[in-house]
Image 1 (cartoon, rainbow, N blue to C red):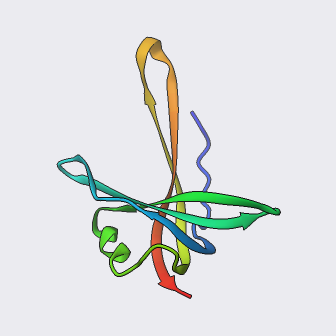
Image 2 (image 1 turned 180 degrees about the vertical axis):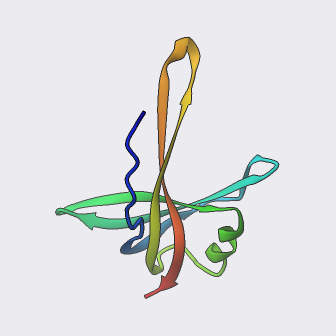
Length: 101
């Protein structure tokens, strides 16, 4: 059995909005909206996806492309067994809060 680690799972970044996706119904109890934020990390431009999940999707309202934002997020991940028993991992950055700079 894997060890369980308890960590403070809150991280923060600043960047500018590159893309705002539409609401995607994944199941009858799960909806997702993706926001892509541009930033520079270690001297290289990055475009990083952030996910608004279920009730947090309302936080994405009122933002526009090009706006500078501050995002607090939690690192999330899940796995799924697909064909021939192969395991695939899906990481995500789940938005906790967002504000304009």
